[in-house]
Each structure stands twice: as structure tokens, then as C-alpha cells.
Length: 191
Length: 173
Image (cartoon, rainbow over all chains, first blue to last red; front, side, top):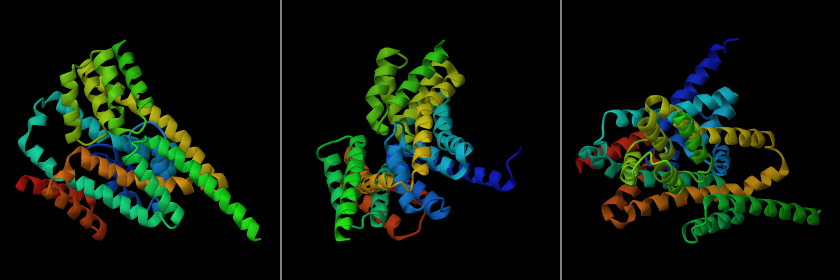
């Protein structure tokens, strides 16, 4: 009844990969994308770039932090239910351990001089890295005028109109449905 | 009794934290500071600055910290479990549906529209983060941002190495 050796090795790989990802989520949210993309898409090749973007669309349409949701999705896709639990524990464990440590021992953690300086360097780097993920996925995803116009209008609605990301996901889904129906209709007319 | 209350409260926070990150702060604050008085407003602000300087999503950091303050280790465990459980159930369900219907033409249409939006959300997240942390108002930080972008985009250096490198650079500067 025990899982085979290969399965155990894959579980271990899944766990350590998400432990790594969970350790480098500074500032929450999309900050974990650069490390996640590198590990999941480039290094282990558990997903293609398109699958990665689809996964992000799904994780954005449910409550909860993207890093946590992504770990559940990827774990399930690779190893089923056990994989989802393994990846989730890996992703959450670093935050859990560090906060527990701080709550127990260090009440003056936030006043640490060197840590502040360290984060002064990390903060702009994170902004650059997330932009890099956007450019890399954009290159893979945006092929047509439709894709480009949709991305630009979504960016405008997010930044200028301040629309909630969840609403943008819904609008994007509707636009995609209408567009592919339109295409089907016009290809029938040509026939 | 306190354990159950912790679990229930953080389950609720987890279930309504759409958008993740800072979008859920008002809800957490209302539950933890106003409704249950587990933390004072100052303590809550302290956690946020700690959360910003430690790895991990804000909701997990807060759950672990508040749970520990209220009930010790078992409290931190239950609060953290509570906050991730709604995501776990929902994402598992959604993932099953998506993987099963991958070749359905309607699903493909939906994802056709979702993909460019996700790209916009990623770029937008970077811009919002940069604005919130005043990164674009200072020439030195703009240069740091652009060098990180260039190194990540054009070289194969692992982003973890880049993050640590820029942190050390911040100390030396």
C-alpha cells in the first residue's frame, strides 16, 4: 500500500520546490511568481508557459493568496490529492515557522537595522522581477490584435479605473467566449 | 472554545479574501481588532510591517501570529489551517473541473480571453507594488528595478540568487 519509490521521490521534489517558493514570497501576492515560474516551468518542466498562465487565471478566481492557491493547483495536477496537500504544506511551512519564531523570541524584529537595509535592496528588485514575468508570459501569450487589445484594456481598467482583479477575470472570460464564437461564425460563412 | 473561535474566524477570513494580499486587510482588521479584540490597532500595524519583511502571504502570517498570541502553538496551527482550508476546497474543485474540460470549446474560448488578462494582472501587480512602495519616485530605485528586470529577462540567473544579491547590495550601499 506504500507509494512506489518514484512516487516518493516526486513527492519529495514537490515538497522541496514549494518550500523554496514559500521561502521567497516577500511582500505576498505576485512576488512569488519569478521563483515559481523558474522552478515549475523552466527547471522541472511540470507545466508549459500556457498552462502556467491558465493556472494563474484559476487561482485568481478563488479566494486566498495566489501562492497558496497555486501550490494546491500545481500539486493536484502533478500528483492528485496527495500532491495538493504536499505542495500546500511546503508553501505554507516557511511563513508559519518564521512567524512562530518571531512571535516567540523576537519582538523587536521590525526594528532590525540590517534587515531594513536588506529589504531596501530587495523591494525594487521584486518590482523588476514581476515585470520580467509579465514580459516573458506576454511574449508567449499575446499573438493577435485581440490578445493585445484585451491586455491593454485590462491593464487600463486595473490601474486607472481601479477595477477588482476578480471582475477583470470575469470580463476576460466573457470577451474570450464572444470572440471565439464570432470566429466560429465567420469561418462558417467562408465555407 | 477559544480554539474553535480562532479556527472559525480565520476560516471566514480565508473564504472571503478574494484577490489575496492587501485586498483582505480590512476584513482581517475588522475581525481581529474590532470584533474579537485579539490585537490592538498598534499590534496589528506591527504585524503588517513584520509580514512585509518576512516570507509568506499576509493572511498566513497574521493567522499564525494571532493564533500564537491567543492560544500558543495549537492556536497558531488551527488559525493557519482555518485560513487555508477554504482555498484548498475551492481550488481543488476548480482544478478538477478545469483539467477535465480542457478540450471543451467553451472552456477554450474562456481561457482565450483569460490569458491576456492574466498577463495584464501580472504587469499591473508590479506597477501597483512599485507605486505603493515609492519605487518609481527615486532614480536609484528605478535603476535597481530596471537592472533586476534586465538580469531576470536576459540571463538565466535564478531569481532567488537575484533577490539575495539585491538585498546584500542594499546593505552595502
